[in-house]
Image (cartoon, rainbow, N blue to C red):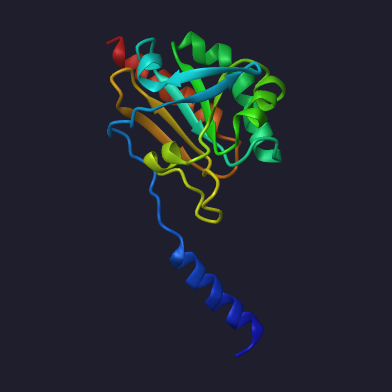
Length: 181
């Protein structure tokens, strides 16, 4: 067997060995959680259920703080925070990074506009099926819009950060229009 064929077989076996985590679907109940978070460099306790009392929550998972795609995504969410607030929504990011790193990330890349959760033991990522198949130690780039009743309104998974903000804003607009009828 040639090297290319051996690599293909090895990659195929490795892919099969990685546990499959499927993102939750619209209509499913969002798993509640409480976790340490950082906003504007200050530590806080984040509770999904407490935040849902104030309106919908946009929960987005990202692979790692200070990487190019995650930095772009954090900037985009920060720039759109006022639009999310106008729709009554709270934005929260989640990654496996530790709180010290997220204190810096929340100040610089999130621009102090929304909180980021430290999910070092991956219990939130696993509950939401947001594990990156190619690197199970990191979160997959998955965004959820969760209604105040705790049901998932929308889910979107794409490693490219480009559409996460626009898609979650549109899902919120549709929900808002339907809920005011």
